[in-house]
Image (cartoon, rainbow, N blue to C red; front, side):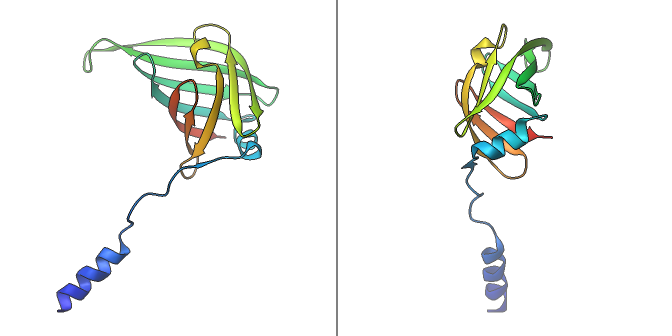
Length: 131
């Protein structure tokens, strides 16, 4: 009986599910983005890592690493781009000029705890957004 009580107490202490991601509002997006960075990844062309450095003046610099080749023998190719960013309503919008043009558009920013976010838009990306 005592072991059943202990097991019940341990079970009650376990989280049933992680907290659901909640969309961030425009002011929070602006506060995190202006002078901050999005660092994340997505499976867009292949597995690709991104860094978007967003300046307070509305410009953005993007760097990505694209893995080519096999899982264990692959190489990384680095790409860079520049453009602009803005907050439109409750969405983060980016416009890139060249190699990252396929990422241009507006993204819903779902907060997943701390600086962790999910960007949902022209591509689905996960990472961190902040300073």
